[in-house]
Image (tube, rainbow, N blue to C red):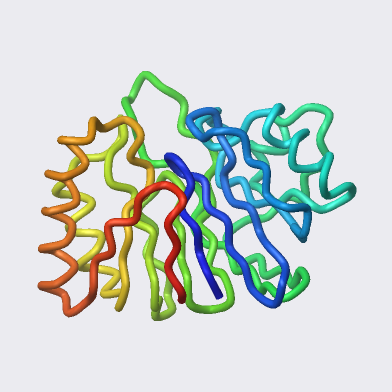
Length: 211
């Protein structure tokens, strides 16, 4: 299975000639994958994780494929048919087994609403938590760790890497950083990953990792 990082929080996961698209949002350039997708996962309703334009572009090449997301996404994505998933849901779609963990977005501020959020474990090995620091009750081989966000401190991301103990870690949710900032953040996350016995891979947009 191959995971390709796009800008910000968007990912393309490929295996057996099919793809799964995760969180194609507003900080990601237009997703123009070649039309072999079996589904789309949206972890929560914020626009940096999905937009109508991105969904229409993907669905135009892959008519009828399902969109999976929590109840908040189904409510926000008016006009799209969203299959609601939640903590404990397991879905088989093409060559992918999707297991969903977590319930809520991390707190940004007490004055702001806390939307629904699900993390997704793909084929039992690769975990992406969306905008939360959910630790699933299974061992994860590869982790996409959020590195910078309005709701996140770098130290929290480092602690999350330690708690997960994944063999391979790469950064995501990082378009809010400058190039210099990404270098600093990646250095700290690499140190935390290696201290926990894992390997940190500082993927840039368009780069991939085999999991």
